[in-house]
Length: 105
Image 1 (cartoon, one colour):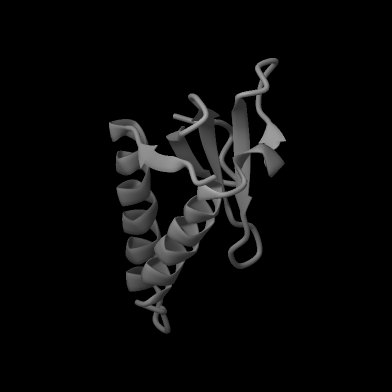
Image 2 (image 1 turned 180 degrees about the vertical axis):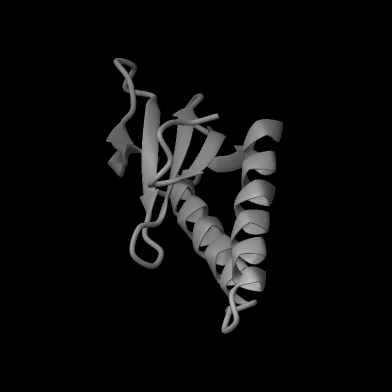
């Protein structure tokens, strides 16, 4: 069975902010890697696409068995996507953050 995965508007904004943050940081460095932001975004998208087939393998994020977190490795830390398994066909990404952030926005 394949799930349909979609992002909330807030999660889509999170992706934009994460991309912009990495890009701006790399632009400020003398030897910055301007492709790093694109690679990070691609890693997040690849991770999210894995939810199509196996959302229940991710760790629980609350008392509800349907609220979960996907850990997305990238570099020394990575990202975490908070999502809900809405029903037997749909998964909704609620937020995406860097693993070193304190909490979701």
